[in-house]
Image (cartoon, rainbow over all chains, first blue to last red; front, side, top):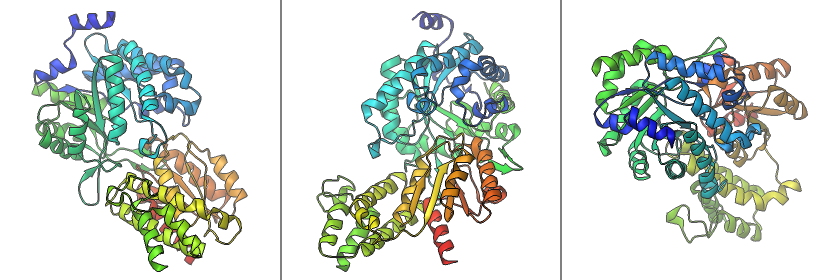
Length: 305
Length: 222
């Protein structure tokens, strides 16, 4: 409660700022950044919020320094269902709380923090889990992120409307915060954008807005160009709901034992205006983007404002 | 008889599990793979012919998936219908009346916890008549080597979803190849490409589940 009152006085809410027509810059990739700091394959990234707090804080600070108005939290896989694989499901509150407080510390009181929540990987339609169980798990994570100080909840990389709907409901009811939900689309052979569950951007936009998301959007994917097309599609059915885009730096190329993302900061920056024109309100990066990418995006957006 | 087998094929392709299954909506109230298989066995149809009918259904839906005409839900429902048939055919497998086409070892590589793609491949390959050994997610290279050693005539499938775990996949491929030069390896997953698979030293790249089946079939022919 204390945190909330403090921010009401010091900072306009995310939604208010977007309503004023402002374009905001979000952050870039966390996973690859953690790896460059030594996260090993098979290690739980969220555990680093406790064991390597300074490294995680450094990533958050890097994105703030790069010019991001918004940063995420290192909690993408912090759902108890995912943590279970590492035997860490009992630590769900602690790890998500820590993720939120680290990003809050880096963001201070003049930048926004979005609590990142990823999909569980468990499918409702196959009866692998009940809606109630799913709700409970999303509620635990959302609550911990709120307690740790996030401004809004970001449910990202979703592909299944049923799971997203449960996650949005759990996040809204548990935290009372604004909820953002983004889906990941791929271009099919027939040239349409669909999630792996077969959902189109227009189907997603309508269903997710109706499920109560305050901001909708798309993340990951195969580069900036495609994000522009996806946003255009969403805008054909929804003119008003703010749209967030976290774009990958292109489709990864595997070369000489390492994974390379082809899109440079300059390339991404050159496409920002088009993305804004297509209807995006918050722009940031996903896999393969670095503080340099965010800095390049921020430079362009700042000049537009 | 032929008609009954065709019906089974259709139920697999459409993901019609049984009479009470609400999916797909246009087949509501009709018998599914479950009832039709029992009927076929009662009528004395050969388990092998029933299995072939299923394989045809799986192949059809797998091909549709490859062409992006259907997506994960449709494929999962087909696999579920296939499972209903397999439950009835199990005794015949155990008695050796029906034989599997070969063994396929599959797992998601170290550091990667994603199993939806891997499960789809697993189900489609199994649905096409292969024995599948599913090692789960976050599978260390040593585990693959151990299981290959126990099952020397297998083909191996590696899955990865994260862009960050492609390196682990490459390491696993190279370890398998240096220990078992004759074992064939197919790789797949969202961040993969034909080119990446080739650079890793894999024998094949599977952009979709059906391509794993096609690869296995091509090895049988050779």
